[in-house]
Image 1: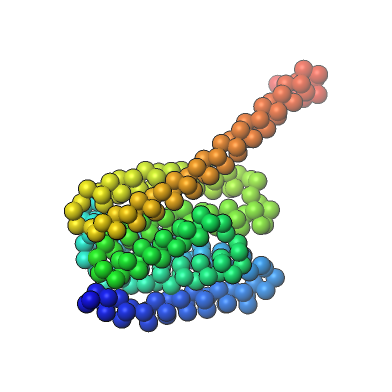
Image 2: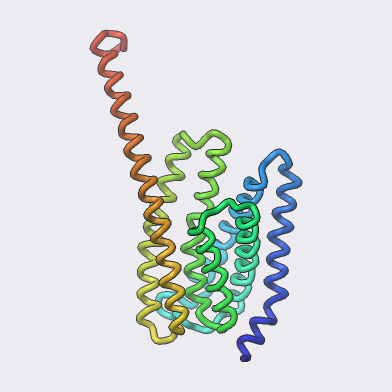
Length: 250
């Protein structure tokens, strides 16, 4: 009951966060009138991604406690502030996605689980340690995802920069969200401290990550095959030119 009252006391902070993200979106819309609503929403998403990565990394690596050894620990004041900040963002983004019908069921499920997980940690007054770690793992690929979209929109995706962004995105998603995420989930499951429904939520979030992973690997495979065929085609053309003496050689 005490935890619930404390969580209700955080409502103004969450509402301030929601108002802040909404105000930032409106500001972007006014500054970029020639751009689409999605462009400006993704600018907000990019901003939140960079901010949440920095804050959650500081909590996990500097302020503590370490999520792999202390899951289910009482929330620290800094964890509560970051969770409230992020909760306001996810409410804003989920509302935007539903209103504009821009995302599929998987992304909506991800946002819904994120909101429920943060609320759960705030109400319980504990497990903010591992929720913060999940936030770091979930957001570390977000700026790259937005960069891919901006590159597509500006016609610069099919370039070396686009290839680097894609490679980093796939590598980080596989290594952090799937690899490190598996280790974090294992520590969560074997620890006696976290509540049972907190562990269920962790399994659900990890399952969503695997659903994303299948789509990402499928994309990476198709792009790799396409790049390979394009390379073979160029090599074949070069050999033909050399054979007919149209390409200068030393």
